[in-house]
Structures are given as C-alpha cells and as structure tokens.
Amino acid sequence: MLEVKHVAMSYGVVKAVQDLSFTIQPGEIFGLLGTNGAGKTTTFRMIMGLIKPKEGSISYFNHEVSYEDVNTIGYMIEERSLLTKVTVKDLMMYLGQLKDVSKEDIETRLDYWLERFGISVYKTKKVKELSKGNQQKIQFIAALINNPKLLILDEPFSGLDPINTEIFVSAIRDFQKQGAMVIFSSHQLDHVESFCEKIVVLEKGKVILEGPIQKIKEAYQKLNIKIKAKHIDIDVIQSIEGVLQVDVQPHATMVKVSSKDSVKDVFNYIKTCDDVMTFDVLEPPLSEIFIDKVKNHEKT
Image 1 (cartoon, helix red, strand yellow):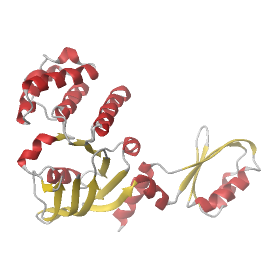
Image 2: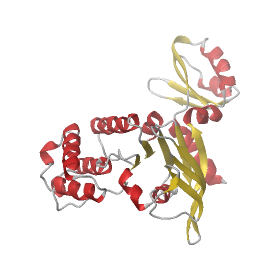
Image 3: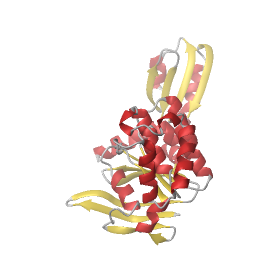
Image 4: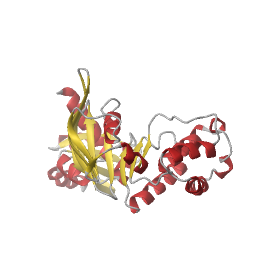
C-alpha cells in the first residue's frame, strides 16, 4: 500500500505541492493529473524517495521509502531519456542489474516484452537506431524489467499511435491483475477515465479535485444531451431554464444542461420536433470536468 499524508514541498518561495493526501492499494490504478507545472513530477520524486517532503509523510507498505525499495519500483518519466549509443540488450542488462535482477531474468523478460511489442529484431540494435516510438517502447520495458510492485507512468502514451497505445494499455492491465499499484499521469484523459477509479487533480500544487471518478461526475451534476431530429429551434432550447450551451454539430445537436432537472423540459420540447431519432443523456467526460475545474481555480 502507498499512503501519502498531508505532503507539502516547496522550492524557495515556490510551493510545488500543498497538503496532498491519497492512498493506493495493491491492484489499483490511480490517476495523478494536472496541467504542466502543477506538481506531478515533484510528487513522483517524493514517492520514490528522491526528495523528502517539507511536511507530511509517505508510507510504502508501512515504512518510509528507502534505497532498498528502488528494486520494487518502476518509473517511466515523461522526458524520454535512454543511453542511445548502446544496444537494447546492453541497456536492459545495465538497468536491470541496477535493480538486482539477474542476467538470466533480464534476458527472459526482455525477450518476452520485445516479442509482445513486436520489436524483437531490435534486441541487438543500438537505441539511437530505433524510431522515437520504438524508443518509447524500450523506455516502457525498462520500467517493467524488475516486475515492480509500484509502477509510475508519466505520459506513457505520448506520441504513440492507437495500435501501440493498445499494447501499452494491455501491459498495464496485466500488472494491475498481478497486484501492482499503478500511478498514471496523462493529458489524454480518455485513457485516465478508462483506467482509473480514483484521481487527484493538482493545479499549482493545490488539490482542486479528488476522489472516485464516478462520484466526481455525480457531484459535477452537469449533463450533455445528444439529439438527432429535424427542425429543431435552437432559440427555444436556449430559452429553457437550466440549458447552458447548445452546439449544433454536423450530425447531431449537443445540449449542455446544469442538472438532470432540465432534461425533462428539453425532452418535452424535442418530442414536438420532426423525425426524432436520438435523445441520449450523457455523463460529462472527465476532460470537460478537468477543464472546468482548472479554469475556475485560475479565477480564484
């Protein structure tokens, strides 16, 4: 279990993280989100014991993270940083042995992941000879080579095409099934929403949103309605109490309402329109809530 309690960290007068708390259980994927400079990287460094918080505490399986725990942690940083003049095999041998993995286990695991990612032919190639996408796969394998109990992934899908993204997703799911804890950070919030049950959103070091995603959506209250019908009078919809926005798209009309109380009034009007094909009430995507919360925080 990883437990972060009232953690704070500052650099001079800059408060990088303020009063941050969350808990992750084995087998959970947790989302740590925020805009650039929100405090995510500082939080990762504190979790791994690279820097100590000014306030609060971090407990990793009921003890403070120490040098010995490095062997059980995998970290894929946002900035791609690999030794490019060595071969893939030599790089993994070096990184794996730093975490006390035997040469035999390193080669077995490397062969498995290279095969799974479809890049076995690059085992004896120098890293600099690989494309950026394949270098990203190697960096991901480097984070997995020690079979970590805690896997920290910072923007793992950046620059990947949909097929390779799905390969990463499958691998992360496998680690979750094995009981690993995964901390996941990404600006691609559709992935966060599909992965994580709980999230924390930081903005300028402060927590502006936290908890289970489903409860966050319920508390947000706003809903989207997707409508397909003919002869819709946009002025009529905009005049309905609780309607916040109407967006006419090529194949549908999207209506944002402040709460479920307004849905019935919108529906009663749409019933009077011609050829009603669709009236779907949709929960807001996490990206919408994220943007709304960050903008409101900036105003305070």
